[in-house]
Image (cartoon, rainbow, N blue to C red):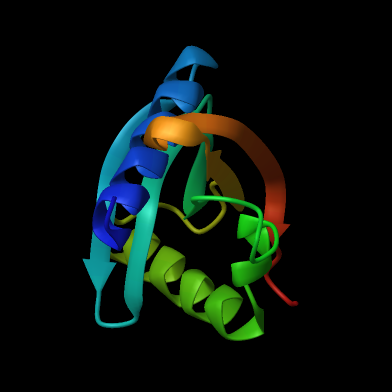
Length: 123
């Protein structure tokens, strides 16, 4: 499985997981000049931006470790761009989550970890 297919498998698993928990998918792979956010969702009044990190094994550490300081800054910029582009009131609550997916044998999702509020506005 190549890198792109691995990422798509993780995103699909994350989208299914979120839908099963009452989230509505607003956008997938939303791009701006600052980068891309994998999933934009909502639940109730809250907008939830989701970065999905997928690994084929745990050999190189947990997937969420790839969300370093540089990545967190880019994610914040992409999220603010989305809110601005869609004229979403700044006071509307939002958060940035990370979903870490580890694939098992056969390339199927083996483990999914949902980290709520993984990226804060000031870290």
